[in-house]
Image 1: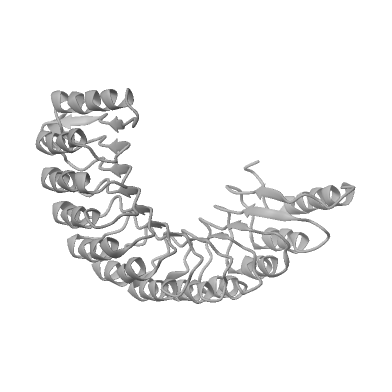
Image 2 (image 1 turned 60 degrees about the horizontal axis):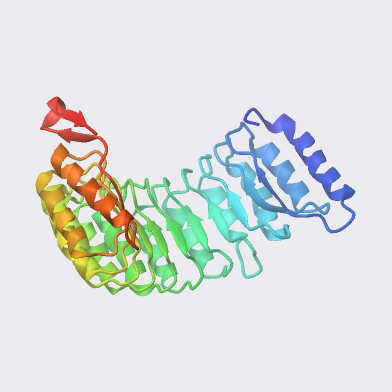
Length: 361
């Protein structure tokens, strides 16, 4: 349902207790999705109190996009501390601020079993980010953390990177939509060079430019664990793409690199294309919406024919002509008949300049 509010929580709690009481054996853990409702602090606290006792076992709880504020943090923190088997808590898209972040982070300790915490698109700011960074140093169970859309700032980014240099369990960190600039990217870069556990990092929808990209790329070249790096919709252009191209020639762990929406243009595409034959681990490259024309397309096609490890290439919404797009599709079709199938997306090409361009594909 998507019309629940605080007044409905008593009924939800009653159902959970009835299910637990009717079980002839130990009750099976349940995953409860209550996202996209109008549940507030009172309802969340009522639910958390029930889930922390009475034999109710909740393995996953989603309260994303409700109306939760700091008042819900006390009950939810108690749930983290006392619930048996709670491994996933999704609080994305609420209105939790620093006091709530402090309480939730304090609940994460050595005995916690929580593996995934999503606190993205709240209002935890720098201080809240620092609290969760502190938690990473004492909570070995957490393997995925989403702090997207929280204006974490340079200080928050630096503190997170510092904590990650000592953390050996977190595998996925999402920090997109944070207005991160070059200085924040520089603060985060040591996370890549000094951490051997993180496998997925999302820094998409920020404001990282060429200088910040160069710091990240230099760290990526030294990294041997990261498998996914998402940097779509930043501002680093051809120069930033060239930095990542140089990193690809050294890196041997990355499987997915998402660079869509960065205006890398033909020069950036060409630099990446020239790096592909030297890298035999990258399997997916995202270059959609990057103003790539026929020259960049030709360079990428040459790399594909020369032999590389790519299995998927995203080129939708660029500026190549029909002939260039068709050549890439034909190369993909030929590879599909062999032992290493290849997929390419060249839909929605804008042929021409400005608003007068003609949409093809």
